[in-house]
Length: 273
Image 1 (cartoon, one colour):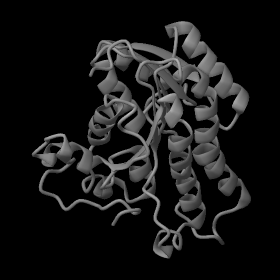
Image 2 (cartoon, rainbow, N blue to C red):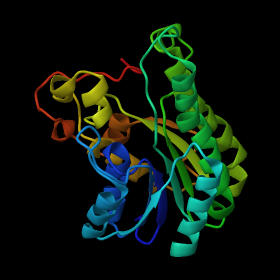
Image 3 (spheres, rainbow, N blue to C red):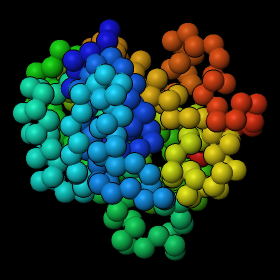
């Protein structure tokens, strides 16, 4: 199965994992809706919705760049409507946008707590809600949330309870909506990386260039997402996928090709390590 002609709405697709997923789909000739905030590049957060659109079209896809702040339902609703008007429908939603603060309770103020819950769980819920009426008309509809497998072990909560709550909220959307939407034949899955991924978040928050050398590139998540999104929606739903497991099961033998520095010890993801 190919993503040729499919319309894919991706939040946070101006850089990082979201952009990598968009570029992988663009190689098939997909229509990509880039729903993100950044319209002016800066050194700390390179890439904009417009530069992402240019890159997508160079790869053979069609792009619609929309400035969207996923904290606001009216912006989500308007963006989904524009996507459907532009491309004639909607096949796939990827909830990738995320806010992160790896801080304990005392260090996480109300503003930061609200931001993580708005961008992570609330936006996932509202994007999905807005997309459902259009997805149920699609031939092979999927929702993919970039969120970790659920695990109630306190060690995943102790260091950064607010962040964990918000990301697990996304995963709970997967758990509940996969059951709810099964009768509509809409697949809902989660995908999460086994290791650190070389993104601006890792560079800025988790150790700079040294941390980046212990990561895999965003393309490993993109290739795993591609496999998921090309599966029959009736057969592949309610899963909490890990990128490396997806690719190994798909027959990929050498994951070192995704390493930023092949042979370097990899940083395990902090929801899996």
